[in-house]
Image (cartoon, rainbow, N blue to C red; front, side):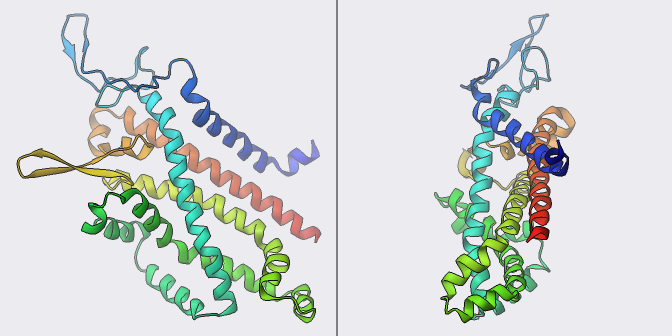
Length: 302
């Protein structure tokens, strides 16, 4: 009981994560989930009048339907896996680049520390979402068949400077400790010092940064979808000389494509989508806080 009280935030975050993983991996096989995501063109009213979708919540559609007549609850449950994979992959790419950058900046090699200072100073004047939109709407990226990978790189790299700078500051602080000097005196190579002397004492903060960034990436992807910028999309000809950009995935942001209209005529679509994304963001924020408290207590014992 003492351990639970001391780590209540982390345990609560783990509980929320278990719920999220259950919905993601077990949810699609639960009764009531339409794995085929069958579309319904219309349903008959009691007066034998055909009613087109979207349908508000009812016994058949517990959370309502989308504009294609697909069950919204099934869409959210089945789309959870794709959504989480995209968000986690973006975060992973960001830190795979940020970690070596932070070490090079810490050692002041190749002028990386100056580059980080410049890029963070530049981006401090431009909101992240604006920078992503500007890059995502460039024609070479907009019409590229590998757009999903390009978008993942754009979203990951736009914030890589901030992530690298945070890790660099932790490395700078840890490098001033006496045990680092003992390693240098012992003749340890820079790689050995990084692996055995620096990394073990910053990995806790690194975990907190990564877990926290998962929530930030989810929020950013939701913002982009709300204004019509998607991770994966294709150009479809709707009339002679007229083309339309359409989303091609079943991830949660897709359901926010018509959020401005749905707020007035089908509010259950953006509401439940935003609820799912908010739950995910809240889960990873609680987890990050729990890990931060845990590693802070461990550091006081060292």
